[in-house]
Length: 205
Image (cartoon, rainbow, N blue to C red; front, top):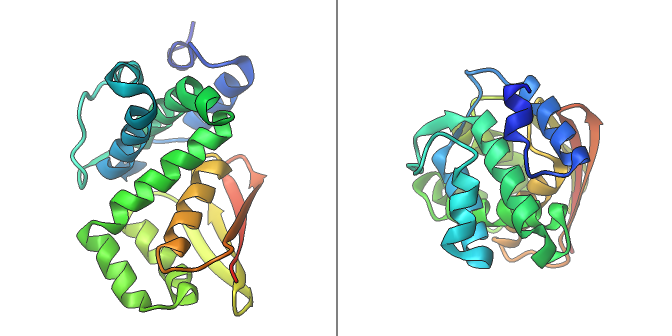
């Protein structure tokens, strides 16, 4: 049994295969800030308590995370997939829990110094905020390329290349970050265009 297959124990077959494929594309240099780990764990704790958090932590070597330290994204994938499998039934499914984790991570990020700077630069403009998101991501993760294409004053696309998280996670991130500026009627839809490439359409009223 491979190490990755062991990590996938507890997931249904389709999720286990998806996780294994994503893990195979990561390198030791691909890292994410501890705040994302903590955001996922906070979302799990709200729904399932400390026992559920412990089950998630069993999937990674670390037992605690410092918000602005860097940790391997492979660990984040394992932790997030485990949490989504555990808590998904309470929210309507695996994808719904991934969205919840993305929302929680965004809430945590926006309360940090880097997040507050991003909001300050945006002023009261959701468009300016989305335009600055690639810079925000670069401050938070070591991997991937992100760019924005506008299709209107309140609609556009965020293109993510080599980002390891499934689309529902970033749907939660993007929804929360746009709503943080008071935008209404926010719509975010992710479409996977490659193994770890995704195109997100965003719009608001």
